[in-house]
Image (tube, rainbow, N blue to C red; front, side, top):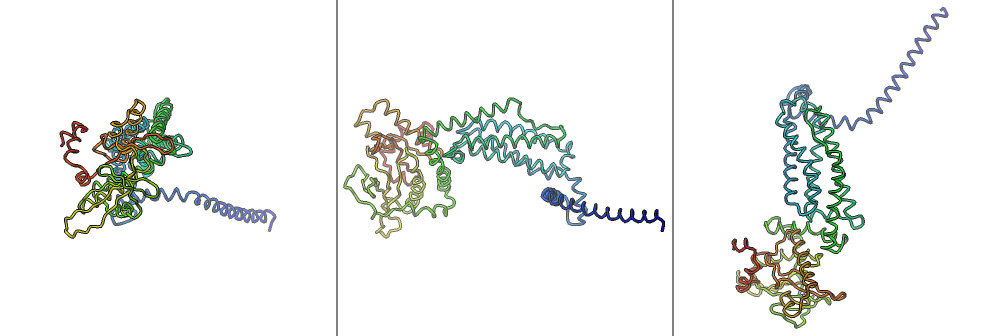
Length: 459
């Protein structure tokens, strides 16, 4: 063998070894890349399968692969309908917003703008069939709809007092949680609309806000948080107290709705027994005022108001007191402890049952008695008016209507430490049975003087 031949053989062997090394190296690189992209591939596969399932009947699987190229806008239709539904809900919440209207307005403008473009896209679906044929566009649109849904949830929460509570932190306050959530939603909205604009190749435009809009957004959230903090300070004495009060509002509203609609009785059964008290835990003091008896319970003064009711009304009253007991955190609502039910010794099916409503003892009796016996200066009148307003605001947030606000149903207490008078709302009578059991004809006539004109017309 010549030297040249040997050289050629060696080069051939070297090339083969080098090639194998490259193959091994490429295999390792491929495995690494596959590991990194598994999650992305899985998501794309899920979207592709969605298209295949929607466009392919049982048969050759390859027909499904072809179907992804010619899919139409019907796959997008449920998402499009969701955008319309969420936009309507955001608009409804803004119209009924009791709090944070500026923030709701900022988000409503964005959602309405986006919903308008979605409506146009739906109307021009034939002109944009190429958009609906791309599975990646489905993923982009799905992300956009998710952001709109998040905005809807946020607006529902912050527009009503019972939803605001979750954004009030005792240590950081609403500046942190509510502001952060608002900013996050704005950022997600802008990114999702930017992705849609790119996918639509400029043929439709999901507009981002003007350059000066960010400053307006910041001003809106700051002003709403300022107003909310002032409200909590006035209504509850501070963020910490406000948080405690707001935490229970949602629960109370749910229980009240359930009771009014006579739904989900199991929900009441779980808490109903807690409303019934044991008479052995109370000691009568011998003091009586009208139909109200003063008792002591562990050194605490309580009031017993006796009424005779039938079995159906008894169950309704127990449910009502279960709701009212949860209002304990509100300073301007008379505290409800529960009910005492005396054993029914009569055997007749329609016989009456004697029960006693157990409430906080009002040291100064009713507002009517108070101003008849004492002189009310302007400062005390203003304080009582504020107290009553606080109580009514809290009841409204819990979706409880009193129906009978008058001086006889406002009770005055005096604190042991500060010796300060406080006005509290009592005598709720939410159900017709309780109103009938505790209201005589004369009281019904007196109510007319305190009724709104529309209530007089209805009655």
